[in-house]
Each structure stands twice: as structure tokens, then as C-alpha cells.
Amino acid sequence: MIVSIASDHAGFQLKEIIVSHLKALKIKVIDNGPKNDESVDYPDYAKKVVDDLKGSNANKGILICGSGQGMAMSANKHTGIRAALCHNLEITKLARAHNDANILTLGARVLDQETALQCVDTFFNTDFEGDRHQKRIDKIG
Picture 1: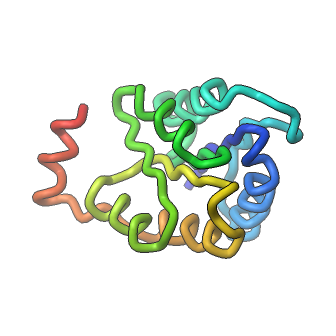
Picture 2 (picture 1 turned 90 degrees about the vertical axis):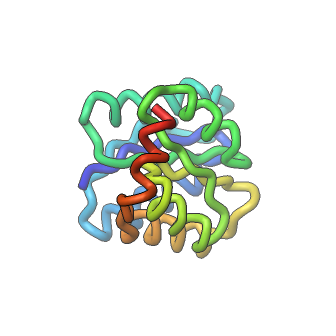
């Protein structure tokens, strides 16, 4: 498993925590920045993770901004990307099981660290159920 991750300035601290968490789990991480909490534009960083997924450099992605919403909107502009804004374990599980989400987006200003890490673990430990859900995914593009 290779995970591509990026954030904006608001998500920088949480990104650093998640990168450490993933590495402790022996998951290979592509950290697309930023390297500090100076102001940056979230669409630029969303594109880096999207490019890793579309280029087959990574299997899944994580994007973090203040609310998670900007990253989700930016990533979902791209064909084949299913970025899910998740704020609890149930939403995260359903995003994977029913929607085959390939990018997890998180809001650093609206989630505590423990919940964010639980969402990360749930995202990577939940399989897509396929079957009736696949025909719906096919309609997304």
C-alpha cells in the first residue's frame, strides 16, 4: 500500500501526525507537502495527490485542510477520483464500502486528533463491497 498525502497550511500539523502514524504502521507514504504551516492554496496540493493516484504512484490518498471541504471539492473535479469528506467512523466506513472512495479528506479545524486517526485506520481497513455499488460507481465516471 502506498498512500499519497497533502494538506494546506491549516492541515499541516494534522498531516504530520498522520504521516507518522502511517509510517508506524509500515505504510509507504508520499508526502506532497507543504513542509510548514505558511499559507498555501489547497487546490495546488489536492492536485499533487490526484496526480499520484492517476499516475499509479499511490493506491490511496489523504487530503487535509481546515474543513476538509475545499480539498474534497478540488479533488473531485478529476475523473476517477472519489474523495470523501469524513468526520466520523460510520461515514468513513460507508465511503469505502459503498462508494469505493480513493481519497480521504479531513478537516483539521473540525476533528480532534484521535477521531482523525480512527478515520484514517477505518479508511484503510474497510474494503469496497462491490456488487450493487459498482454499477453506481460506474455512473460517476
